[in-house]
Length: 432
Ligand code: GDP
Image 1 (tube, rainbow, N blue to C red):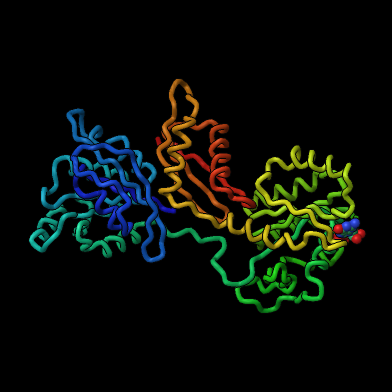
Image 2: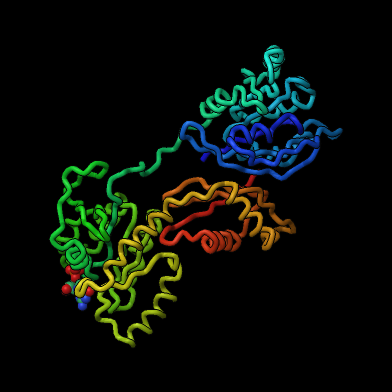
């Protein structure tokens, strides 16, 4: 989601404006000029569009030249922002520092929305117009305190943001889409037959579905699910040469259309390389994942022990996926599939509010700071969730983060927020 940095001299009303935009008193309002704060990031929504608002600490004019007047925080914000809200106090008018910053913003090439704040009454309209002289385009007169002009301002912010990336999946009221996959002979068609029973119906015209007649509506756990490419399950793949190749093609295209995958494994046999490949395909496709061990009726006490060992050794990397032990033959535990699917899909669509994410990040990094590199400890500035389905996070830093530390953050994120059944990713952006 796009990032909007709020910059301006101390005491021009940044925090009040952020509160106005957020519609609640979330930002820390400081009345004392010159109080430097760390940057705080918040989620904001306007007309259904989400963006992250980063309230910068402002900058301190000092004697060491124009560039130094922009504080480190404000500059970091500029490096990571998609647009800038530049706030000027009309009562004071544009100061030398404002002009210096205007030049920095102009050079940044970012879209800048110039805000003439404290236009609490009409007397100040003319002063707002005077800010055209900053060379940043039209000044938007607002009163952050009274809320005047904030709607128009938010419209201008949205207009300045980059086009919304097309969500891979649009929200749909139709059935959730499931790919039932696994290597040949693990029992996919048996399981489908068992859970669907006589209630199978071919899909011809279900709103919001692919309308592909090979997809099938199946009732599981009292709810209808769209099973993708069931024709591939019914048509038995013979042990012909290339069978594995074609079955992996089908798996890939089923995953493409699905939101969640049930990877079926044969509990009676050791995990094979092909099983691992199927799991990797799900993770790489970014789909929610449920692992089902089939043929549980064949599992005796001895096998149960070796299987637990295999799970730890071979499935550790997807330890977050719900596991269900089923039998297509007896119907054992097949009623546990639907709750597992629901859990995985919920995790897959989870969005952590930016404020909460950053509070969490502050605590984790405070307790366990990143290791130094080349004698310097990289500073972690803030994080934002860039997307859902699956959840994707971006952490902004002042320096390279060791991969082990990135994995540490990922592990802690899972420990504290769950995400059972969904892959998640954390990428790091280092500001120059
Ligand atoms: P697919 O290739 O994954 O669709 O596998 P099938 O559904 O065709 O099943 C392959 C073989 O495993 C068949 O002989 C099934 O009868 C057998 N099978 C499937 N599920 C189970 C199960 O839960 N328990 C046992 N014992 N056999 C099963």
